[in-house]
Image (tube, rainbow, N blue to C red; front, side):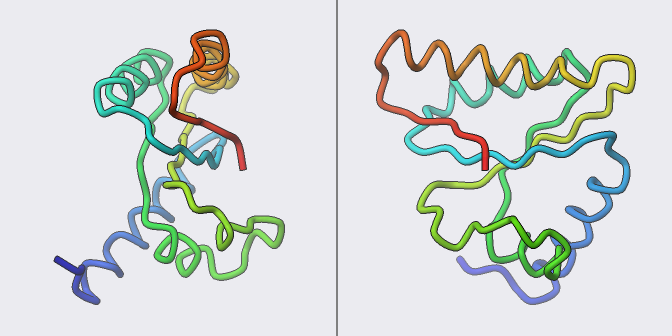
Length: 117
């Protein structure tokens, strides 16, 4: 069921609020990622004071309103997620978690992908 215009505006506001509260924000794409793997990644990132959120591409681009000129999600066929980093002491810890899963995917030759945008 499609989102209503008011729901889209609420999502856009939530994305911007999370951007403003975060020390760092990383844009990632993923494709064919199993739900249990995504949940495990979310839990691991939460342990490092980060938040992983799957977002709607079009709503994210409208919310950013051209703020990031290098951000091109139009050709991305995969699903987009944002990694919000709240840990000021070690802002690289959530990135290490993502890197661990990228290495795991490469070594195990599994079917899903996780990439930085």
